[in-house]
Image (cartoon, rainbow, N blue to C red):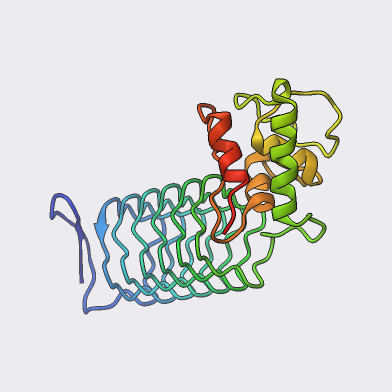
Length: 243
């Protein structure tokens, strides 16, 4: 199997046969590679560069993707069941309708990743950065590290945050995350994510943005923007949205 660069057509790697099952691709540079439908079961892709790669429908069951770079990769419909994605970079990756059941995503970067309709049943999301991730219709049943055991009801918390911002606009500043502490009376202006942590029990060792994503996420409802240029009206509309 020849691995081709998607844009140039150049051969990046050449493997005999039609499978990469169990292949050792540790540290391989597969930037922009076309791996559509590839059989990568049990493959070793530790620290591989898969930035912009097309892995649509690829089978990555139990693949080792520790510290792999999947920035902007297309993983639509990919099978990542039991894959090891510790410290993997999935920034802006498209993970629509992917199978991530039992996947290990500890410390993974899912910033602005599109995870629509993905199955994350039993996946470990401890300390993963979920800032701006689109999790609409994702299945998070039994996902480890996503919901905090002592977290308040997210619908109730959304109302509390909206009421706080509306009642005290002088303490709302989208340009300041806040420190994520669990004391809402410290008098420090902070953004919507900071207020979610203040009123939701603190950041719990995560970044303010990632913790706030877990605290405010409700399937089927829009997430308020954490961006510095988001308007107060846009944020309140998202927080008060109903199904």
